[in-house]
Image 1 (cartoon, rainbow, N blue to C red):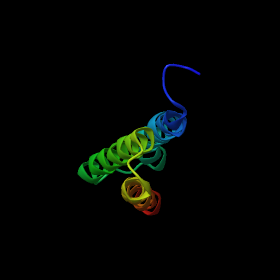
Image 2 (cartoon, rainbow, N blue to C red):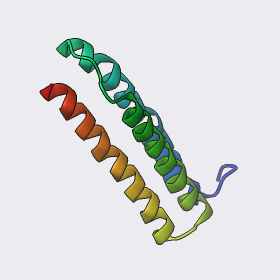
Image 3 (tube, one colour):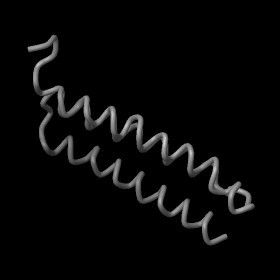
Length: 98
């Protein structure tokens, strides 16, 4: 067994997948898609809010798993991450349909 207990393994996986992969997708999409379409990204404030919600959800889920805070706390932060994902989809759809 390593330095951390096994309860931190899902937290580590979420930090890797949501923390790096999803945020990389968000960043590339916000940067590249408007340029490919030749349109101006009109809602940078909402994009910043979306990334903030994604980070809050990520941190909350990781800590809830690692510290054993229970399914209710984890579920709340999973909902925050889900809301961030939907907001991302709506913002990108606006770019694609502009």
